[in-house]
Length: 339
Image (cartoon, rainbow, N blue to C red; front, side, top):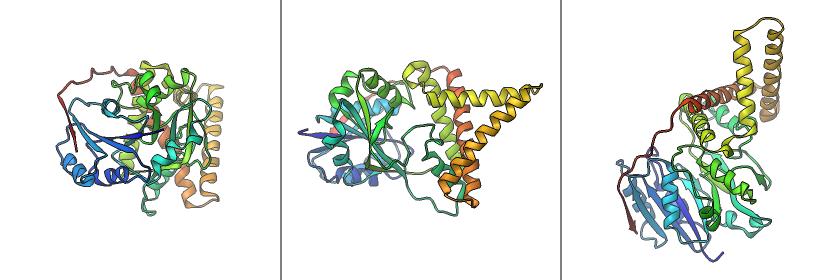
């Protein structure tokens, strides 16, 4: 563990990359190389990033206009890195000062671990924006995220089935041998990579001490579109790699299909099955809402409504992704500059 390198992907839609760059270039851990990939932005992202980095010798900027997907940008950054470990985050995230140190901790890498992920927390949302708050909060539970740890509010180290690319560290050797991220995918490329690592006999670990703050969505519509896009990405990834197929996803699809089909065909006794399916789902929904709010209150109803909104937006996107043809990646020029 002589040197570690971090790779951060700049997304065009994020309006202020300065905070992200400052957080990753100001880590408390020594020997951190920071590589930021800009996919040819035209909104001043590059100049903002350079100002935030200042004259730090550990900062490298890569401008790659061919990075039509986040996966290509991450692979580009990984190819330019020189460290033994690769830590990934996104430009709409803010890493705590001990983020790298918490991920690279030797305790995380025992017993055939190939990658380690951390705790991702949404930035504060005004409490008066009740439904938006409930949607983000529900996503931070196992029911809301369908078992994903991306926004799971875990407090203890544990083994994970997948790690989000906004808060994950890979052994450079494992990353290379596993083929890196699938550049044809816009979403769920991390799930496919993690599945390949697990198929290779290695484990994925989660530590709540490696904290990254993720910028929240600003409206209910943006949030639901985000869930739809994630679902669509999952559907496209499932056609690409069987590792993207998970039991919680299949269960969500099954429940949705049962409700949809039986809502159309209500001949007895199928209507009883419909009512039973709805009753079980809503029972789990209300129980999860009560667990989140700890006691019946106004927010309990918001959380009870949030779970179905998340699930059905995701499943709708999943169906779209399964039916959609995957476009060929665009190819454009790239350049590299050291700062």
